[in-house]
Amino acid sequence: MDITILGIESSCDDTSAAVIRNGVLLSNVIASQAVHVKYGGVVPELASRAHQQNIIPVVDTAIKEAGITADKIDAIAFTRGPGLLGSLLVGVSFAKGLALAKDIPLVECNHLQGHVFSHFIDMPDREVAHPAFPFLCLLVSGGHTQLIVVRGPLEMEIVGTTIDDAAGEAFDKCAKVMGLPYPGGPVIDRLAKEGNPERFAFAKPRVDGFDYSFSGLKTSFLYTLRDHVAENPNFIEENKADLCASLQKAIIDTLLNKLIKCAKEYGIKDIAIAGGVSANSGLRQAVAEACRRRGWRAFLPELKFTTDNAAMIAMVGLYHYNRGEFTSLDIAPSAKM
Ligand code: KG4
Ligand code: ZN
Image (cartoon, rainbow, N blue to C red; front, side, top):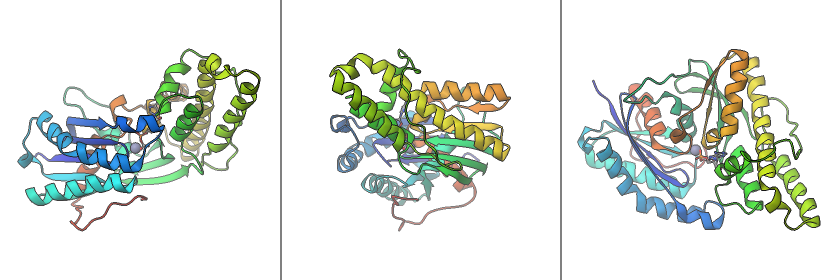
């Protein structure tokens, strides 16, 4: 029997809806919110309002692009959290309303599990290789940096996490002090390609176990800028590419170091990366190369599944659906999960 799931994602600043049938992607529509660019970061109140404007056309388009009608949907999967409460509320309320109107079940999903599940989305026109259990997933986004041992569908253990800033946050905050637009990650990625990654050295975090820290690196980056700008006011402009390349290398080295240690400790040879920062070209190359050298398999998500999207949520929803795990209409969003 065919199972068709509508996914809804609204945890941060992307409104997204997607349709999957038996795990195969039929549509994945994402409306990004340009309103935050001029503030240099996501403004929660503005994000909620933009979700409210976007949600109906985005869901409508996802259903149309999937070539189905709303009565073909078997369940609605939505992001319950973690995320911004006002943003989540829009998606959760919409999902409830549609479920009630169509008399179909609701399935609550964890946003972070969604990023991991981006590795299980099948495409209609080609085979996609999936990691085998157990695998190790480095989840790197604007809000999270986690090492997750994935033992089975929905059986995930977080074995390392950031104790301060997330990797994406480090990219975004350092970009901001260089006067680059938000989000800084993709801009630094682009500029780094022209720069010398060995030009500047920044403080390396010393944190036990598999936890991460990026605030020391950020401070060290700020001090480097401050010292040089005191002597030459045009320092940033003249050295932008080298600064970006060196910063990106420092972040990648930090991420990779613990990823490899962790894989060795757990004896895992299937390595995946996920989340917005997994779009970073330097990180993708470095992970692919590190795995190749050791005879491990590297799983790099398609770029469209790196940043927030509803396809990954629909995928988590399918697993819950198959287990008969449904959510009642009195569910509330949850900022932390
Ligand atoms: O997963 P995501 O879309 O949202 C969260 O759940 O946080 O991740 C957004 C983060 C931002 O910090 C953004 O700068 C970063 O992903 N990002 C990148 C790249 N593309 C997005 N960071 C580095 N290089 C990129 N190419
Ligand atoms: Zn995310």
